[in-house]
Length: 324
Image 1 (cartoon, rainbow, N blue to C red):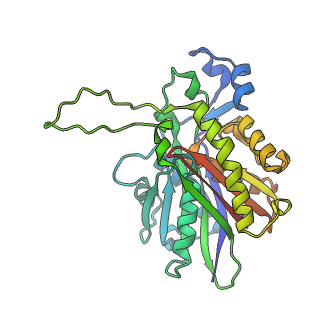
Image 2: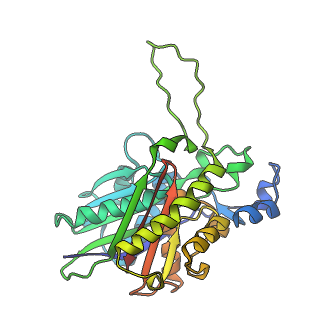
Image 3: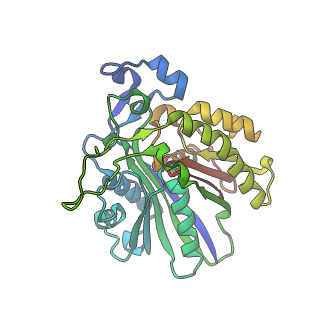
């Protein structure tokens, strides 16, 4: 039995915010942002929550495939901006799309979340117990951003994407190799909506940190060291050469960072998919959004070896090689 990614889809809020828009209320400029990040604009929710974005992406995937949500066995949603601590946002999506038979849960691995969720889903399906499942990555980063902090506010956007996995009677399989990692010793490098212990039985004078706080230089340096290593490892695990990789669909964090990763891995930058100029960093949504856009534009063709790589808070990082 093989596991295939049969359909992809994404959804972005209609409202866009340009760099010039941000310059109206913070000390920044279009030139400053583009030079450092490659971002020109980003999509921002004006009322839709993470479950709304994920549900729209899910509906588009199901409509494209021509199947009912009732056929789904599971929904796995990667997000660091859930609607609530409980229920899981995946359960809210289940309700909104009518996936009555699906079991549902969230994966929290920040910008690596979609990689982690897709790996988890593939292994669940290889058990033989499930036939169809949705893997989604969705974020409303705008609700955890301090919009007065130009070091973070200029970077992030909102959006959702995902894939449909189906069990095949043949041995044809979308999943070639994987390589996943975490380093909890550096967990404070990226923190959002931190929850301190609070109850009537302890003194509590600590301030709660709601907004996203990021050690930008630390994250950049971590990614420069760790991402090329996971890319090299996953290619080796897949018994492939770098020349066999058709496309790298990397987390869209920073164009300069992706150029540096290209240089270190000696994979031509022309093989790196890009949409950061129009979406910004959508965290767990970034890889599935870009994957669907590249398929829709026919950059990615059937049979291509596609290397997915994500990295972010946790710290977490990892890569998958897939074939559609």
